[in-house]
Length: 105
Length: 164
View 1 (cartoon, rainbow over the protein chains, first blue to last red):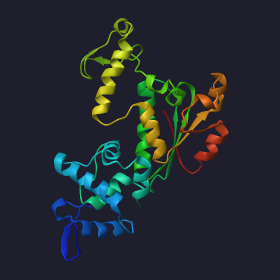
View 2: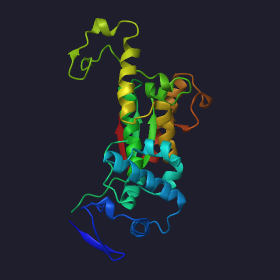
View 3: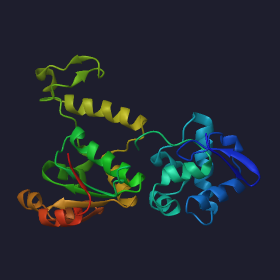
View 4: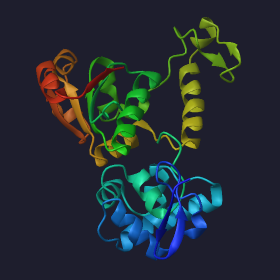
């Protein structure tokens, strides 16, 4: 498994770049992960999404669907796609330090 | 060499049953989730997915569907005569929608909104609109425009076309 030293911390990733241990995550680390994934700065709205994703992951073992994410986090679909351009669920999972989302919705 | 990634899909939804509509919507939404450009083209009975007042009345066919089993997917085949009883289609639809809701698959109206908000583009087929005597005001606001098959090929250029 690839490891990388970020902010003096040894972080392990899977082959697709998702963190394998979510307990290594911190908001400071999120900023670094965001930069590596093409997002220059994270704001409060990004963190609203990241926090909800982490909460769901810790509770259920997998990230939320986009539908649940938008309904429960209060960040609507349009904004979600603007905050995490390209593939929002994947990108948000990468930055939230959780596993790749499974599911088709 | 790794094959190049799909960048754009144009999906034709031509059927108006629940199982005719959902696969196209799931594929379009899934494309947007992966950052793939998505166009949806509704034609023939598929148009009902974007018709105001009708889009959330889409049902599953309980007659003429030899794969239909009850009460679960591994149950016994539903006899045609039972499937034809009044209310059977509505009942089967309700059961299936419940299962879909558990998986966070939204009702058609909400799904169309979600795809549109995600940046998917939706179009209605001109030939069917004329044939069914419909006009643009009959469609939900997410429908971008009524287009010809020629327009459809134009906007599908450089991408994959999927017919459902």
